[in-house]
Length: 290
Image (cartoon, rainbow, N blue to C red):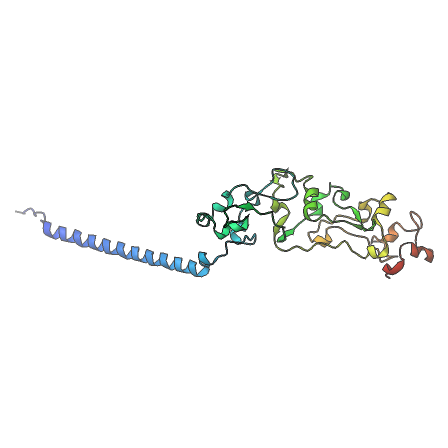
């Protein structure tokens, strides 16, 4: 006769001991993970502190557009374009600055207040006049403005010899004829400062050139019915000095493929160089150059 095998009996005491050991092991592992995370966090904080200067050492009495954090902010956050005023206008209130510098604004007369206000000690916080803008480069693409007449931006100066280049607040007055508040072009906002300006130094183009040394007069030629496009062509190049071509005023006769004074001064449309006496009509006085 085959006897049935009785099932193995589990000792309750042994089972509870095994569970306890597993629980202790899990707690130990969790503890090690927490310690590792804490050490990693402390290391990250220490590394960040080593890379960034302590907040107490920062100079909050000056504002810099070149600051990396400031450059990430939109210009319209601090400068309103509600009108066509040629001078930028600060945003009213402390909201744009206090959003990031709440700790500094908690002090009623901290150094950050002196950026925009005077008489801090007396409690009469007068607003300072807007400072002159000296830390911005300017970009302009003639190719994007083909439909705009040259005379919109360039006027005759120096007794009609040279042509002006918009600068300072006058430049804003000229540009704002089209770049009105919230103006759009090709689906993008063209009223913001960043449309034309980026942080960095700026060197203006000179209104002097070889043509001006040859007693050339833009205003004189304008009265004779010569248009800007007859001498200057928009090239589409991005370099500022190469966006618009100019005739070779000091090279005549020149190659037939190159535009020069002789293009018009060919004894047909206008007096030419057949007679040496005609040279003095353009080249005279101390400005004469071969």
